[in-house]
Length: 340
Length: 251
Ligand SMILES: Nc1ncnc2c1ncn2[C@@H]1O[C@H](COP(=O)(O)OP(=O)(O)OP(=O)(O)O)[C@@H](O)[C@H]1O
Ligand SMILES: [Mg+2]
Image (cartoon, rainbow over all chains, first blue to last red; front, side, top):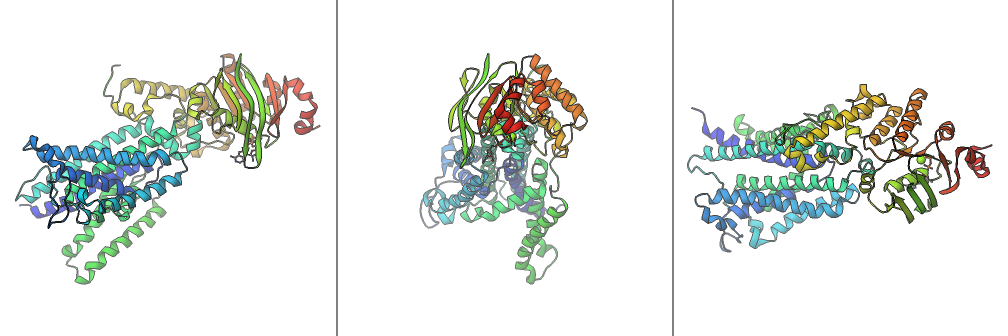
């Protein structure tokens, strides 16, 4: 018989996070890899989504010994019993995308008209502001205590491995769907126009492209994907705390995109799996290899060094990433609608 | 019929008056040459017409409609197109994609329409590909269609510039030194292509330093100097104009 605890562990600590970060990486890749838009506030969009998702799925708790409460919109969906959480999860996921997308829109509207640096500065600020606002909005977000005991749509009680595997599969299906949509849109003339903007925005403008509008579309869709992934992440961790959404997270997502292959949608998924595996490995290595307690703490720092070395090696030997951008952008997709 | 009217247009960059109360006209169906010393403001004038810059003062009228102050995509939509003096190819797109991406009003450039996968969207795309390949054949770049544009030589990049504006099917084409750096046989071919297109109803406004081209191919010539128009008329008139001789032609 297979060791089901391994299924639990792999799902929870590697596969599901890899899928979730793959969605974020696809969002960042749309912004940076395809359209050349710098986003230094990935964790902010992701965090906003995580909290929106959590608020929709978690029952309300009033202020009390457990810490401050939160809205607990899940009660709105009680009429759908026994699918309450599933419906709340779906609605929360969509709301997370909408809110993160709107925040992206608000940032993009003024800054995308300006030089590229301003978007970088504004997103950097958003990352900081989002976390601080979350930390200080106790009645809605639980403040520093966060939101705890976030439920998932599929729970199997004692069969922990089933619960974990089901969630990983859910995330995987969403990755497939997102990948299919993004791949299709970026291989269409839309993606070609985005790449033209990335290569030379002034030239694209003079050739008659509405570069502002195209950039806005790419940025907002990317931000929405980050938000949706955040909602999934809250369900995975079962808690949402402000400290999960630090600039270190933004940095990891960037690493996934660069390592995997900026501009290649498949590549960034590979990057997400590779980097989350590295993290999983350092977390479990001491059990697998019976490492002494000397390595317990040090291995986490070694991981950071390894990531640094990996990035340097990649820049030297494979500057375009593990799976480089395809040479031709446009590909004919399957025709879905319309007659000959 | 007047196609383009530039009326008292000025543009300064800091202390430099690049274009200074410039007034000129382009007749529909003609080939008009724009000449003048380096730094006279010719490229800046083109950038003003296409909307890259907006004039400090003055009016620019295209087909009886004011276009100054409009963003370039609205101006391009109305049927103007411009090439760059120094080629601005999209480096990592292929040569063919460079041409295709320049087409106007492609429905697939909307993310929603591209996701829906409508057959008509992709038929447009197929037509565009055919048209773009024909244009590449015309300028002799067929072989390189699937190469990244960064691999082209300087002269080939100038040719690509030309293909990118032709695919837009504009009625007024602004060419900033279209044959500079292009070999003689090919530049003859390009000039006869321009002639053919003019016969089919297109209008050309071109900057050129090669006086053979200017005086043999253009219907009218406009001379700029220090941001102003100092002379204009038929090639023969301009060639004998004292101010032009002094500031530009030498002699
Ligand atoms: N973006 C800009 N910023 C500052 N100065 C500029 C800018 N564009 C043009 N100029 C200045 O305006 C003047 C006219 O330049 P322009 O490029 O229009 O000349 P030109 O007639 O096209 O010359 P050439 O024949 O050498 O191409 C020059 O003095 C140039 O330095
Ligand atoms: Mg010039």
